[in-house]
Length: 128
Image 1 (cartoon, rainbow, N blue to C red):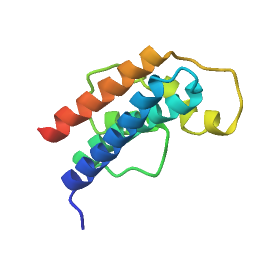
Image 2 (image 1 turned 135 degrees about the vertical axis):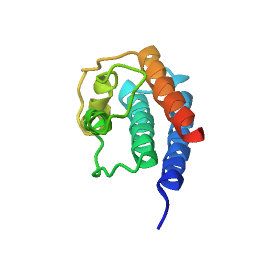
Image 3 (image 1 turned 90 degrees about the vertical axis):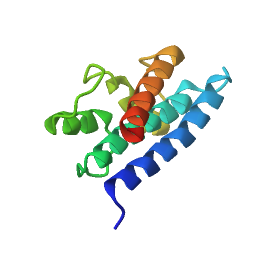
Image 4 (image 1 turned 90 degrees about the horizontal axis):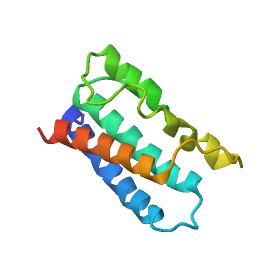
């Protein structure tokens, strides 16, 4: 069986792959923000899951970053940001990928900040 730290590192590598896609899309203004937001949400989701794995916390398959944050809080994992920081990314996981809607609750700059915040935190925890 794979150890929690190995699973955490693997999730962080997957988050890095999504960061590359996210950053590439942010340089193309013709790309719909729902596609860019999807990769932002994926980075944050994988970073939260990597923290959970690192601490040996079992989580169900979900794309809900609020659920993951709540789970970490239940296990007394300290976070360097307000718990609801990532909530606005949730619609990008599924809803905005399958529905045409003009509703976008954040800018690319806000997405960049959240992606960097989640990634730097997870990388710092997992790298030790």
